[in-house]
Length: 435
Image 1: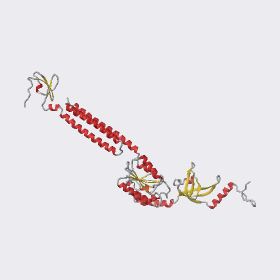
Image 2: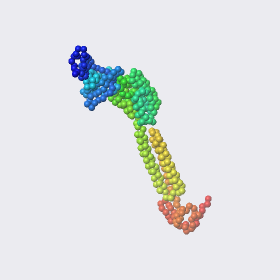
Image 3: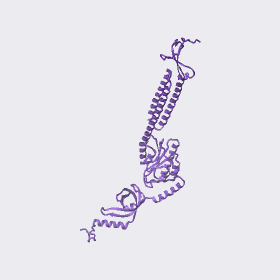
Image 4: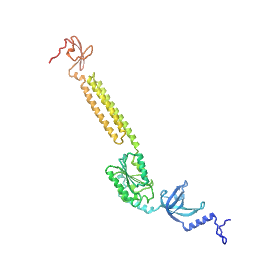
């Protein structure tokens, strides 16, 4: 039978498991508690009860931690794996498993106090100078000609952004200006990367810039709280979008940028609208333009038919003119169809070229129509009759009499005048005028 009493002479003491655990817990309580620990979070989880469970680690060790609901509710940030934190609590033994455990009573990001104060001071200074003024911020272009990216070559954010741009707008060229995004040299490299893109922007190569980095602790993101970088962002000649960290992370760069995106991928989505959306809009505009062109050609054809109907009996020349106009209209339809087909392979300039081409051809067709209509009106026999002339036809056959030799004595003739017709009889054979 095990006992917790003093051992008999010559025997080592034999502990009961529970008693040993309690003894170790008492020793830890007397020796260490309360204790403050600094380490990196790993295996963080939040139970449905509100309790948090995780481990703190560094290069030399690891310890299990528990943070109960009441303490967790007082946190002013969302802990996540990989974040460096400082915690205070009580070290003890979880007797059911015999595990060493730290019950955390408070937690803060490591070094947050001093860095956060620097952040607030710089933020207040730049805000007073107007660097965050919403009035100076610009919208991102809907159809960018080129996109510049400033980030690290080894950053996961670069892969996410490039993948998003390739999926949504593969036709838009992308220029990368590599720069460190963490460490003492990072602010200078970020500024240099931006300035290299500014030169391209002034040449018209790019018209939007993305400044991106994945998430991390306040120390990891500290390069984006640099005053020199903030002033370089404000000096951008084209709209600049920042996508630094996670949605809950804010840096000075975010306040200075024209647009702040919650993540790097979101920044890419804001800068590049899906190509399929624009193609669908172009198809819709093409259909509407085609319908409008068809309606205008139809109206021109109707006007031509009406002008032809107003002529009593058009001559062979007027019939030829009408046929030529029909062929012109047919060629116009074929040309318009071919132009619309070519426009489907273009994105931005297709719509303007199509509109100008169709409008020019329609304008010329209408000009031809007006000139031909005028010619048809000038050939109208009634205009000649109104000047005192008469159109003679045989009263029986209706054939036109165009020569004096066609008239016979006693022949019944019908004379068409401007305001009516008169029946006549030829008294003598026609006499041919001689020069």
